[in-house]
Image (cartoon, rainbow, N blue to C red; front, side, top):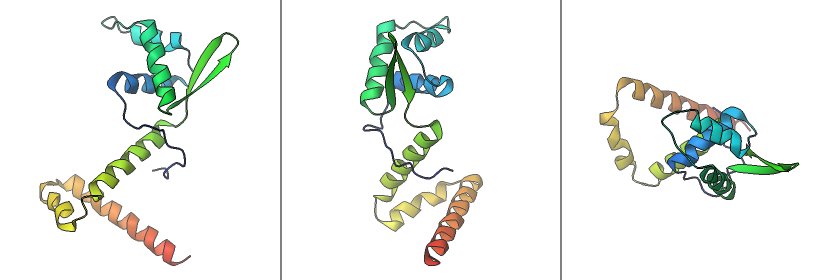
Length: 139
């Protein structure tokens, strides 16, 4: 997994339509409102106003997820983070919230409910943490 990026959006929370549009942009790269609108309307069961797409793109820009460039008369939106970087940030935030409980017994109590695959993941994480500690001690 990639390291925690230096850049972070101003606001991490996204609504369902914001997340859908951000995923479209990650897939397409630099996009216009029309690109996103056409992609959403390619599903015959969907309806969405062009102006709604514009509003969501502006909101994602204000939240710090997108950058906007003007080329000629058109505006192009581009992601400021890769999808992988966003996943790293969200995972980091979730881990910080989990660890903020503070009481090791409370944090460890959930272990009884874990399946073998989850226990294997936690063991792999523990090994990675140990490797980081050893590397830091060697510096």
